[in-house]
Length: 387
Image (cartoon, rainbow, N blue to C red; front, top):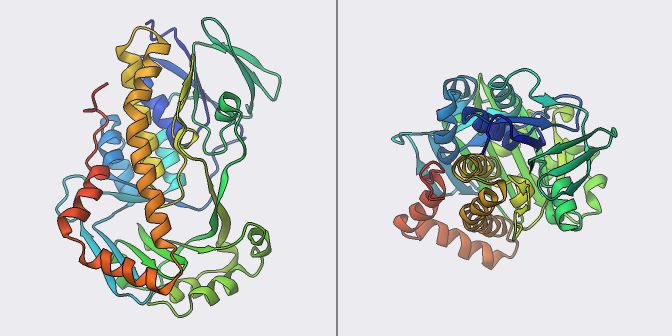
C-alpha cells in the first residue's frame, strides 16, 4: 500500500475525525478532513476522557496539554437523589487517570497536531459512488473528488451512514438533557470528582474542569413534543424538577444564568451490523452512537481511530483492512453500547419498587463484580488488540 499517495477523505472534524487524521499521519498516510461547518466553534460543553482513550492519546504527545487544560478525575461517586452513596470508584492510585476537559480545548489541542490545510471547511457531503477501485465523492457546493478511502466520522446524524444503509433518522431515547458550565460557587465540590445522582426518572451529574469551573448536566424523561416546549424558562423549569434533591444539585442550578443553560433531546442509533462498504467505512458515533452516559462515545471513537489506522498499515488493500477493522471493533463497540444502554435504563427507572431494588443492588453487589464491569471498559488498549 502506497501510504503517501493513498487518497483518504475523512468526513467530519469531530474528535474521531481529528484523532484518525493524527494517527494516520503518524504512520505516513496523508488524509484530508472535510467539515460541513465554517469552523470548529464548539458549544460550551465538557468531555471526560477515560484511560482507554488517554493511553492512546499519549502516543501523540498531547497528554501534557490535555492535563494542563483539564482536570484529573480522582473519584467517581454515584448516589441516589437524596445523596445516599451507592457506589464509589477511587481512581487516586491509577497509573492513567481520566480527565475532564472543555470540548473546545480538546479540539484546539488536536487541531494543533495537524498541518495547516488538513481540514477543508464548508464541505458538506451530498453523495458518494463506490467505483471499481475507489470512491467518487460529491459535496453540496458541487465540488467533486475521488478517494481511495472514505471515512465517515460525521457523528450520529452521519450522512455517510445514511448513504451506505438508507436508514431512518436517529431514535429519540425518551429524555431531554440540560447542560451548563459555570464558575463553581462551592469550593468543597471541586475535590469530589465526577458525581452522579440517580433519582426517579431523572439524573444529575457534575465534574470539575479546572480553573474553578464546573460542568453540570441533568436529564429527565419527556415526550418528544415537549423538547421545544420546554426551551423557554429553562432555569425555572429545571430547578423545579430538582429543587428537592441533595446538595449541591439545586444550588448549582440556582447559581447558573438562564442563558448559560442549553437543552436538547437525546437521540442515537443502534450499532451498525456492518461498518464498511467497499472503500467506505464508519467510525465513532457514525458506527455506534450512544446516549450521553459518562462521555464514553468519545473514548470509543478514539479506539476506532487507532484500530483503523493499524489495519490500514498492516494489510495490503483497503477493503481487506476495513474487514479486519470491522472484526476487531464491532464486538467491542456493541458490548460497551449495550452496557451503556442498560445503565441508561437503570438511571431513569420511575416505579418506587424498581428504584428500591436498583439502589440496593448497586450498594450491595460484590465489589469485584462491579470492578470487573468497569475494568472491561477502562483497561482496554487498542494498541494491544489483535487485528
